[in-house]
Length: 254
Image (cartoon, rainbow, N blue to C red):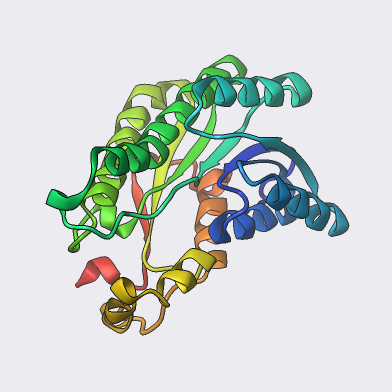
């Protein structure tokens, strides 16, 4: 039996690089994957690909910054499929690439709303559903920058540090209710967003230095993050909660 057979698992930010790889990994492991994203065309493409490979998938267009939309999406999962067993809260956006004193209030609010408040909204309603149906597992995408800092990323760093705080707090609150909550700290992963940033002047100069910061000598692949998330969602990690799993090629070891 596959490790996620008969599990209903939400993936937010499903249309991005890590999201797409995770949807494929979870479906291959037997899960029914509920994909959530603002990108409707991306969701349609995911559904087509997963169904073609024999997987089970259900798409719900959703903006994680809209609490009512998140609540409705989770309720739809429970109504349609009976229970929510797992969630990979992966939706996120990039930093402004500005020093703190140059970040506008609007830019600050934007990244906090998506990268932190969006995770809070998702966890809030996922946990409510799991409390009703016997527990589950939640995995949040943080970042290596949830543990350390670099220049010109204070908005993103604050948001990702916050995700780690939410993860730990929820693990303590809901462990007695059979709900595990963990985070993944990716290093630099070769997603479409990173490949695009590598071509921008304000990032390209840092690109080689960032690569060299990874002792393994390369950037990560979305499939490597997906494999970590799959493990954390499975019973193989049943005694793991409140932790942060680094998938960073050694970035945080330096």
